[in-house]
Length: 477
Image (cartoon, rainbow, N blue to C red; front, side, top):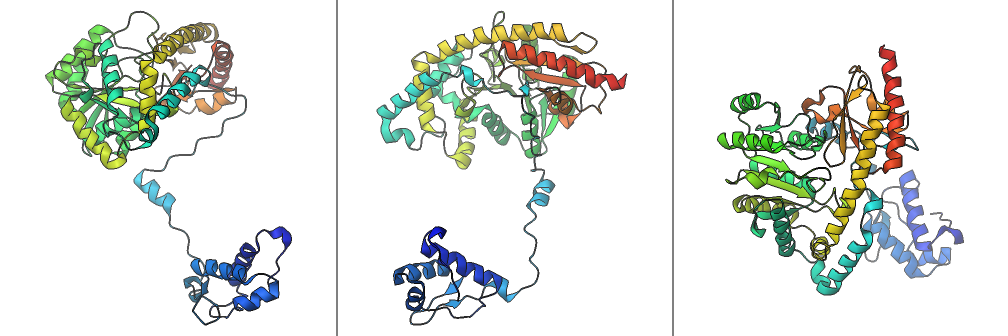
């Protein structure tokens, strides 16, 4: 057995392992062939015997050698050597996942210099990093290892108490026992579907609606039923389809940014109450009302426990904190807590305790007031930019009363136009509105998010958007 060790090749024992594996793999050492004893190989290579012995032990552990007391090492008979036919292809994971509907397309790479109206996370420039860092340190000093232990599956009691108090400011009566802490709003939606539906059930949704909720419905074998805007049409759909749940966003809806007024909310709640249809209310940006007077959530008008309210800190604090909540009658939260415990045990106590400290010290209110000032200016810049860059023959929109989103209804664009790719060539990223409709079919619209752009970037981006849309529409004329 010819081994060549070098000073530059790293640890000598590792070189022995690698070279013996290579010789066996190439067929230079055959199954059953003897190798030199540890004494002989150590002498030939000028090494200590223990170095060779350790290398042989590793080769044995990896399945390359047979080692028996009092006998020379032998090359182990491996299955691949006993059956030297051509290698079989690996397990067809791609085909299996595609057949199950689990495969997701890889995101397309974005060109350099793109201004993004597609991203919908909190602007890192506005994150209160120093204040939250102090809260994290304070919790670790106060709780020590307990902050890193398992926590309450329903969520830490102190944070649930604070959230119940905050909900009270929005007119929602909730006790800490009616609050379930989740890993963002997404987990709350997932838990609600897993706990309250069965495969094949119909779930009523706005059209368009949050695209990742549509994905959840698909993965859980549920039918998305588009809800008409008029109440007569809505009642007819409820009676015909018999949905088990109605998912909607009354405030700053994703993707349209629009909000229901007080009268619309009252009529909608009355209709669902008449048909005993539970409502899953997504208040993901409830706190971001910065124009006009706030309108209370549906949950604030609910007197029969029909509404499950979902909130999150991801869109107003840090996306990566992954802390949200669900407020519902205790029978519901208890059942959903049991489901979450089976799959995840509990949400991380450290982040919950730090968030509670952050809230109690008033940092969140200061941060929220700052966000309102900043995004009032950003939305004003966006509306002014749209008026400047897009005439009504190209796109129509409505100015929202808060949140981060604008919804453009385009004029003169056929279904064949690839809006996202075409506008990326003009230096701006957007979301094609068809992604937010059940079945992926809908009118030609764009969702614009200003969550990551300041006023100057919004102005530049909308100028690019206007040029891009005009260029994309020209071939159709």
